[in-house]
Each structure stands twice: as C-alpha cells, then as structure tokens.
Image (cartoon, rainbow, N blue to C red; front, side, top):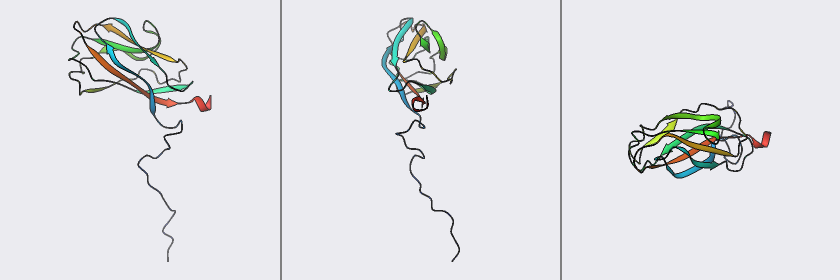
Length: 141
C-alpha cells in the first residue's frame, strides 16, 4: 500500500488563541460621546506591555454620524502616534453598521492607554463603541 502522506489535523482556528501569535482584543470603550471635541475615551490596553494594532472597529452608533470625526492616538490631545487618523465617521449610519478604520501605524507600541479624540463633534447627542484588536508581543520583549 502506498504512503498517503503525513497525517494532518484541521481545527477551526489554525493557532492557539492562548498565545501571542493570535489577533486579540487589546482595548474597548463603550458608549463614547461623539458630540464633544477632544479626548472622549481612554482605552486601557489589556494585559500586554508591547503590541501592534491591526484592526480598529467603530460600531453601535446611537444615531447616524453624519458630521463627527475622530481618531485614536497613543497620547492625550491627539498626540503621540496616530493609530487611526482623525477622519469622518459618516459611514456609521446606524447602530448595526460596523466600520473597520484604516490603521495608520502598525509599529510596536508600549503605551498602556489609547485616546479616542473627537476632532469634529456630531452636533447632536451621539455615542459609539470602539474595539481595538492587535498582536501581543509582550512575551518577546
């Protein structure tokens, strides 16, 4: 009988999610006010000292965000490294819309807080949720 080749195992996810090789939730802010300019949320980085942001998701807008603009930074007042540049949130037209933002910097970071800065207010009461995903490098630092 011919050798059928090496044995293989298939799983739902190819990497162990308990390792730092997987993209995981790094930080979250729920109910962020987007009707006031300046820093509206401080997102604490969860359980890592070195990381790279790969995805930033804005979702669950309380109203259509036709005017507001916001960005995500490593220091207060839109300072430090711009993880997501200040940009219009007009794609968030309903609570069910999920907007994956363009990540401006994937460089390894050590800041333990990220700051959601609203550059342009909505002009009416409005909130949204922010999720930050990335790679955890703390075991290799």
